[in-house]
Image 1 (tube, rainbow, N blue to C red):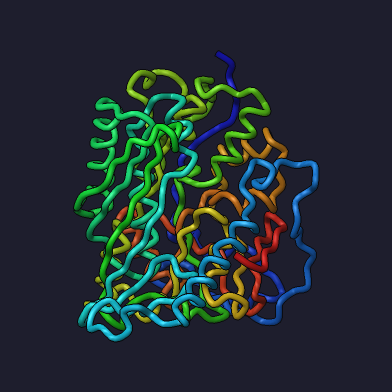
Image 2: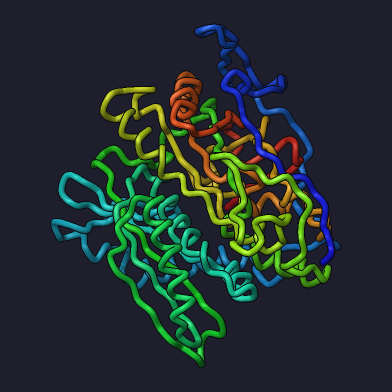
Length: 436
């Protein structure tokens, strides 16, 4: 087998180093010491006029070239929502009933409906074309983790605690061995996501599907009037980023296109230093634990589930005002398909976001970008690039939240701030986006 070289290592962010590390004329910085640590508060002045890349070079690989047109998908979803509203005259079919009235707006990560003194949250998602890699390797031991993660992480974005999950599996032909692997994977996922598996549906569709497809729906709950909507986000708020552990479950059509183009095999071994700790690691296949990771192992590394300790953080803020009052948490973003543009789902056109001191880019992203000559513009609107989740918080609460998370074995870092630009700007990558 060939060997593809890049280094992979863990990183441990220290609490004292989580301040934004750059000084620019549009950032007002006030420093103080707290318990021996240097603390910082950042606010926004007028935005600096800079030139940022907004389009990829025509010669590079793009998501659209691989068959997934993000802009076309966005307009298609818009058409669906528009026609639904038109066909229902803009009315909620449950508006006259006691339970089930819609309270959320389109564009949020999860839908919210009324249920007495509580709100129920619903979200649905699938694993996507990552399953094609699992099919090629005939390895399904982790993909259910992706399915659950994509759903429960979305529930966290509205402040909901995930409580239940149902799955849907479609195959061209049933396989007890494959479904046994999925059952084990679902068990691991449900334990990590702390959800009950309430049932599901399986379908054998030889004329419709050519390989296994898997999706699911998750249910959560949140106390009424304590949902996170993003409506309280305002310029000067800080972005608290949480590390990802790989590609998660997005962008695989582009990944697979590049691998085909460059004739890279999934069984090729990658020369890297695998991080062996509780924060960052690669799930190894049972048959190759003593070997260097393969391309397939890196690509099938499951999506990080952020339920623990974020649910505990929300509850602690609500019940004890520690590490801060819950009202200090203004927004939450699951960085999935669309990459950094997911931030623009919060108050679109009204506020902006700026990444100034990002989390480390995972080496698999750097490897793929170099392999496929992919532009920064395309990488940052397709992949998480090392940051899988983010909270938008009041500046005064940021360091207290970080310290609380660190005590619960959770790494986070202040990576940027909210602005009034209406854009998502990443300074290091020199990219700018105006819409999701």
